Image 1 (cartoon, rainbow, N blue to C red):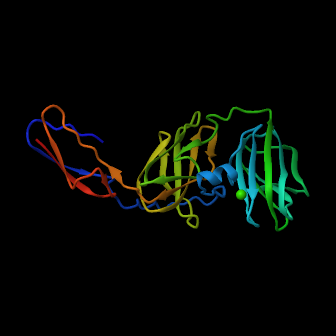
Image 2 (image 1 turned 90 degrees about the vertical axis):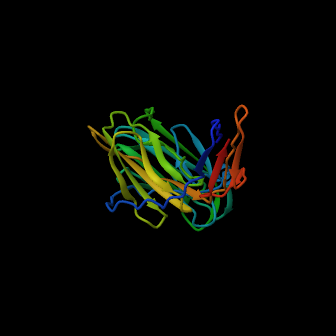
Image 3 (image 1 turned 90 degrees about the horizontal axis):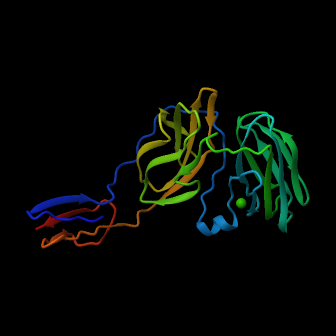
Length: 288
Ligand SMILES: [Ca+2]
C-alpha cells in the first residue's frame, strides 16, 4: 500500500487487515450432498501424497496409502453412456498393501468396489448418471504403500463449464489472514448458484447463499483459524449440478506492511512506525 500526501495537513486513519467476526452461517441445510473427503496438506506433502483431488481422463496420479487406514478421494465428471476404466496399481508395498477402489456415483451411491494383490481395476464401467463421481482409494487389508491411479473416460469430454470447478481458494490450500470471497469457474447455462459452507470437518455443510447470479460469493471475513469446506450447486434449465466438496484452511495472519511515501516536497509520518503491523493494528498517517 502506498500513500501520496496532499500539500495541506491531513490526518488519516488506516486500518491494516481489518478484523471482523466470522459471518454466522445461514441455518438452512442440504442433507444429500456428496461426502468427499478433503484433506489439507502442506506443499511438500502435496507432491508426495496429494490425498486425492480432481483427476482428468488420461491422467495418472501417484499417492500413498499411509498410515494404515488412510483413504484418498479423487473426483471426475461423467455422464450416462460414457465408459470408464480405472486402475490403481501398487508401486511400493510397505506392508500388506492390497489396492482397493470404490466408485461412488453423483448421488453418493457406491457402484463399484474392487481390490487386488498388486492392482485394483474397474474395467469398462458404463456411467449411469451425470455429475461428479468420487473414487476412494485405500488398502483392502490393514497395510500401506504407494500407488499409481489412472482414469480413462471414453469418449473423453471437455469438462469446462459442465460443473462447478476451478475453486479459489484452490482446493486443499492454506490461506493466511482469512478469506472474504469464494470464486469458481462458471457453469455453462447456469441461471444461479447455491453455496454451502462448513466451518470444520465435523460441521454440516450449510447454505450461505442462494441463487447467486455470478460465480462468486462474499463470505464476510473468514478469519478464524481452521478448516473450511464448501460446495457449489449450479441451477441449470436441465437440473441442478453439484460440484465437489472443496476445502481450504485459514492460518494465522503473519502481519501486514504499510509503506507511506511523500510525493514532491511533502513529508509523511506514520504512527506507530512501521512498516510491519499485526492484524487489526490501527495506524495514523500525518501528511504535510
Ligand atoms: Ca494418502
